[in-house]
Structure formats: C-alpha cells, structure tokens
Length: 120
Image 1: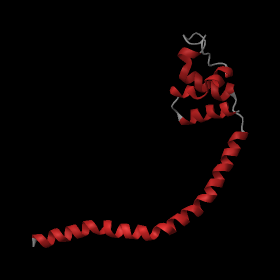
Image 2: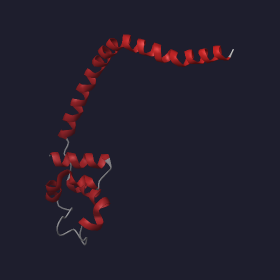
Image 3: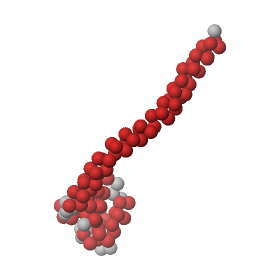
Image 4: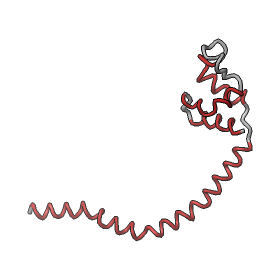
C-alpha cells in the first residue's frame, strides 16, 4: 500500500517535468517564429519613440535645474561648500560632468531628463 502510494506521488511529481520538456521542445520552433513576428513591430515602434524623443528639447532652467536643486542644493548651489568648484546652476558644469551626476541621482525619470539634456 505504501509503495504504491509513493510510486503514485513520484509519478505525479515527475509528469510535468517529463512532459513539459517534450512539449516545449516541440513548441520551440513555433514560439521562435511567432515571437520574431511579434517583435518586428515593437522594434519599429521603439525606433519611432526614440526619434521623437530626440526632437523635443530639454530646457535647463525649467527641467534640469529643478531636479538638481532638489537633490544637490546643499553643496552645489549658492552658499554651498562645493559651489565654487562645481556650480550646478550653470549648464556648462552639467555638460562637463555628464553622467557622473548619476552617482547621486538614482531616479530613472530624472536621469532620463538629464540624459536628454546632455544629448542635445
């Protein structure tokens, strides 16, 4: 009785593994073809969104500076201990530093705005 119960449990446990591999091996060529067809329009859509993103201009005073003021006000703006060396209220400083700013800026939407500004 116990041995038949153990065999039944093992059979139930191994069934998905045995049949799952066979099934996925048979479905794999179809899955690749279907996913390749589905990815083609998405690739075109991504290319279009990138091209429209580069068209829009990022304004330093209204878009970049407020981010830096919120994150870096204590040191890199007027009165801060790093203001003389790296004044973040000047676009030239930001362009010189580039993505080195991201050591402190972790928010991805904020990073994207700064990346767009640097790409101009």
